[in-house]
Length: 504
Image (tube, rainbow, N blue to C red):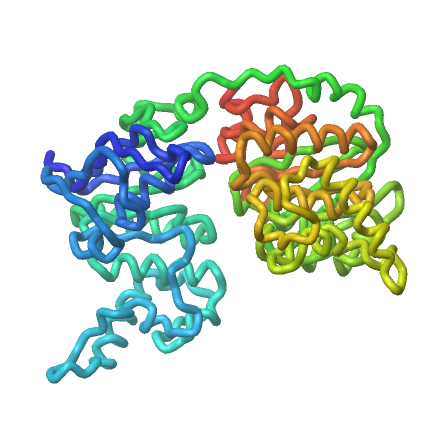
């Protein structure tokens, strides 16, 4: 059978980081191939190589057996490759029709845009998901007025409007409800019969087994297995994804029985948001509690709810007293701190000095007029304890490396001596050496009695560092992992919605 597209031995580097060292994917017409891998395996990079977002450094792409390169997504689309991106590529201020036909509007004679033709074609596309919208959609509706799931449907319609030979669905079902997913799968079955080749990127085991004909598994930038879906089990896929489980001998595992006897610092009962579907959990004094699962399954909502930063319902007991913070300042005042996931936008004032950033939550305790000498002494003390590499406290914080900037965010909260520290993927973009320092610091913080709730997209990090891990899946806690079941295989399986018994 002639291949629609073949990625062979693809290599991609980002500076000193090797994202792909041997990525392979064969895509046949009339088939769905599932591209699978754990966090950081290289799936997104390989997808971006195929759709022209990323230019690869080694290997080759073959289209119908002939070498090809895609310097841009437009060049890939011109050759019949279309992508439904995980991050929406829509313009909220523009209408549904304008988004779908942007830069390629049907024209009348003399170069005028044929608005009537655009509306007719858009209605035909919208009808593909008839019955899946909360309210009927008009081509003239601004995309920004639609709910997230319907925006995702418009993203799918935009991709299929190119009538591609190869369609890449990159986490296209993540924000869809069950009815919408089922309709998409009905359309995928039709597109297969029309001869389209479809790459399906998903972390949901149930969906992968329902829709895919073949699988291709990436691990640490290398394609480690490929074959027919009807010849492998959930257990087999997870084993390919994680390889041999990493073995950790961290002292943290020896602390579990000790932690279990400590008093509860925070108890959460039936926590609900637009994403969370009833969370019950407890974190104890001095515990480093990990929150696992794939990004976007409610981890951020969990942390922001505890911090009082988003609307929520449910019951919180903090050190035995019922609380319900409606604003972060209430949480901060009572000993809760949050290190956000986007440090440049949410954690720092980039053009202000390191000292000013360190003191942001604490200036009120330095009197009026400000006791600058004491502030400088405290700033020096905390920066020394964090081994902060800087030219001086008066330097702008945006002059620091990513790892040192993250230390500043941690440091500003340590000055407040929090009793509960919330961490949202804090080591993302941080070098290995700084990570090691960071892990040591977190352990010291816990030994001093502070409790930590730690979300990370790095599975190895969670397993190696945390006393216990709660794995989230679709807004719920899918599984609690403690030794001896605290393994990468169990973490990945739970993250993908696999049955609890699949890795026993």
